[in-house]
Length: 204
Image (cartoon, rainbow, N blue to C red; front, side):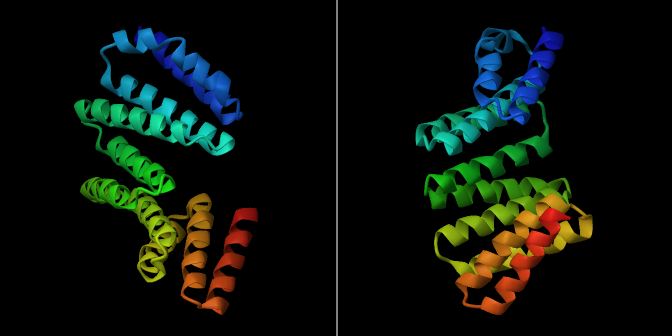
């Protein structure tokens, strides 16, 4: 059962990475009974996490907010199983993603609660890159709330961490967040410089 479940997850990821979201989701939903039967909590967590990621993409692609809510439900199931599996890193990842989805639904206060929890978990395992990911999400929430001064601090921190770690993909995204925060503070010249760097990193 575990071997088949692992193979199905891999196949779903392949379809997802090729943007074939419906097929990726079909693989998981048509084998839901298998994932209910297995006893490996890590695999169960990956099943729900993958389901949530697909629904998140579909929600964005089709502008269907109910998919966001379904994704949150799957993320919460994933968190439950990763807790039982004692996997702190994946729990932090899930909490950060829930915070992001709640921000997309304009549920800002709840989003901050999940991000608080996510950050505590990443600090516990001393994972600076994942902490920076949470900081970048936090900055995006503050921007959505129009709180640009509050957004600028975690955005700048995330940029510094990603630059030191050499994580170019994350760095480009964090630079965009930082640039938007600076623009919101009317620091136009600095914002343009940061956004230009984001473009250069993304195309580098």
